[in-house]
Image 1 (cartoon, helix red, strand yellow):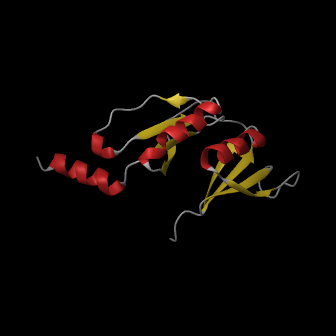
Image 2: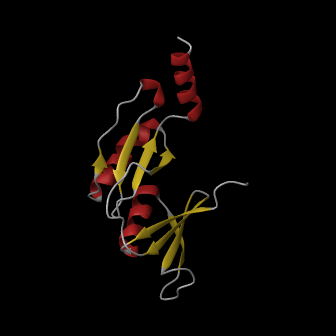
Image 3: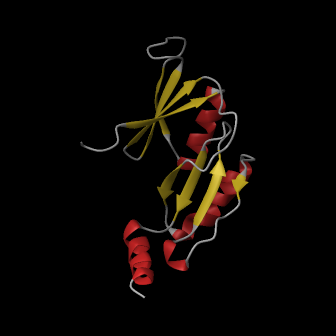
Length: 136
């Protein structure tokens, strides 16, 4: 395996979903199928850094879950992201309890009930903290 190829999200409104990815993640649109249907429905492709995100027109999720995608961000940018999220009127999920060494997180839903997390910690930091608890 070489890594993740892409992530696909089914969205009710391609324009609203495009706004979401462009405003929150500074995603760059690289493709729009227009009225063509090469896959299951109309679609658009974006890049967030080197990560390929696909959005396809379809029915929104009917309910929210804790299934989510987490993006790593520097801690000092949390207020900037919070401002972006609030400017789009997105729903912020209440924080779960966590130990300090896990880093900080901001959870929020897009227009189609997909949950996203902005996270300031690393896997190494979290494992070090958990290991310390297990050895005591």
